[in-house]
Every structure is written in structure tokens, then in C-alpha cells.
Length: 283
Ligand code: C2E
Ligand code: MG
Ligand code: MG
Ligand code: MG
Image 1 (cartoon, rainbow, N blue to C red):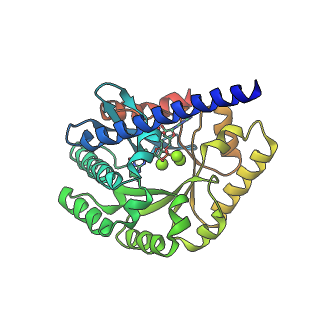
Image 2: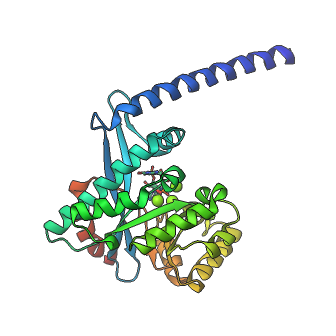
């Protein structure tokens, strides 16, 4: 009986795998046309100074509006895109649209807030990333300080020297760099020493557990202390409650990002969200 149960389980498992595989290829195929068919868009989430309660930056996050599946989460399609050079086409679209957004904000006389874009390892290693970016900035007349790059530790595991060179070249052209999802990867400390990074983004798993879990709290405290000692900007990701915000303020982390302030919003809602932050957070 145990045997037949085992067998039927493995059949179920294989069917699930097959469905996943099919799904994977379907998504990959559709993703090829997403840009041409105008199915990608950007949403923006503010990074908030916890003391002044003002937005100090924005993060651009990609969305894929699939014709039949509706809105696909980037955690579902970015990993697929990362298996081929699709990711490079997608992220170049993201960079162009983020820079275009800056040019638009500037022409509307809106206060300048740097926009961060997320890059994958393939983008970092693609041969002409830096000229592409400086070209874009020149084309739209946007200063390099208006753009930031977020990378994760997974970028460095394989290509540390190459990544360091690219981050340096970005810094040299005036674009600052952030380490995203800090604390979830491996051997973070040696990367921090070796890489030219201006900002540390504490992964949301810390923010979510630090008030419940003593070890998480101590680790978060240590990360903040370390970032401050290295004179890096520190951003806590995934801030959802007033208690989390107060903890961060009390422990020396002064920038937060998360649903407590605002979820990522489409461009048409962005300025209103920015303007209402201060009012809402003071109430
Ligand atoms: P990330 O860069 O760490 O972005 C933060 C993610 O957390 C976003 O998910 C955001 O919507 C979500 N988030 C923000 N505040 C909260 C909160 O208070 N609570 C919770 N539970 N979640 C919050 P999203 O937009 O689904 O993006 C997921 C990941 O996909 C990003 O993580 C990033 O690694 C990747 N990604 C997004 N856009 C791009 C892109 O244009 N290019 C590349 N290469 N990757 C991207
Ligand atoms: Mg990010
Ligand atoms: Mg993150
Ligand atoms: Mg992430």
C-alpha cells in the first residue's frame, strides 16, 4: 500500500512538474513579445525619511500585464527572463522608462527624487551597460544623481571582480549603487568590504520578524550598526507597521520603504502619494 501511495504521489509530482514546465515555456514565449506589445509598465514606491517623513527616493518596479493571465508578479517572470537575454531587454526598457519618468518630472517642475532600478547579474555583465546608461541620461537630459542601481548579493557570487569594476564605473559616472535584500544571501560581509556600494537595503524578512524574534532583532540591530559604521545609507524594506517604523528610528535606521508608507503605485498616482506622505504620517 505504501508503495502504490508512493507511486501515485510521484505521478502527481511528475504531472505537476510537466504543468510547470509547460507554463514556463508559455510564459517565456509570451515574455518575448511583452515589450513590443506594450505589456510592461512601471510602478513606483517611495523611500521615506523617517524623521522628516518626506520621500527621499523612489524605486521603479516592473509589472507585466499579460493579455489572459492579468498582472504577473516580477517574482514569477524575472527568474524566467534571467534564463536568457530577455532580462537585458526588459531591464533596458525599465531603465529607459525610469529615465524618461525623471525627465517628465523635471519638465513638470516636480522636486527631484532619485529613481532606483533593479538590475540582474546579466545586466551588470552585459558589455555596454555603463555607456547605455550614460547615453540614456544624455538623451533625456537627466543628471546621473537622478538614477540609482539596486543589485543583490547573488550578483557577486560568481563574478566578483567584474561586478566591482562595473559598480565602480557606475559610481564614476555619478550613479550610486545599493545592495538589495541584504542579509538573505551569502558571505555578505566580504562583499561589503570589497564593493563600491553607497546604500544597504535590509531585506524585508528582517523588518517583518524583528519585533517578534529576538535573534532577528539583534541581527537587524547589528546590520544597522554596521551600515552606519561604514557610512552607508540604510533603507529598511517592507515596513508595514508604525511599531516597525518606531523601532527603526530608535535603532538608527532612518529610511524606510513599505506598505506602511505606500505600496508601489502607477505613475498617475505617484505625485499624490508623495505629497500626502507627510500629512498622513504626522497624523
Ligand atoms: P525588491 O527589489 O526587493 O523589491 C521589493 C519588493 O517588495 C517589491 O515586490 C515590492 O512590491 C515589495 N514590497 C514593498 N513594500 C512591501 C511591504 O511593506 N510588504 C511586503 N510584503 N512587500 C513589500 P515586487 O514589485 O513584486 O518585486 C519583487 C522583486 O522582483 C524585486 O524585489 C526585484 O528583485 C525584482 N524586480 C522588480 N522589478 C524588477 C526589474 O525591473 N528588473 C529586475 N531585474 N528585477 C526586478
Ligand atoms: Mg529593489
Ligand atoms: Mg529587496
Ligand atoms: Mg527582492
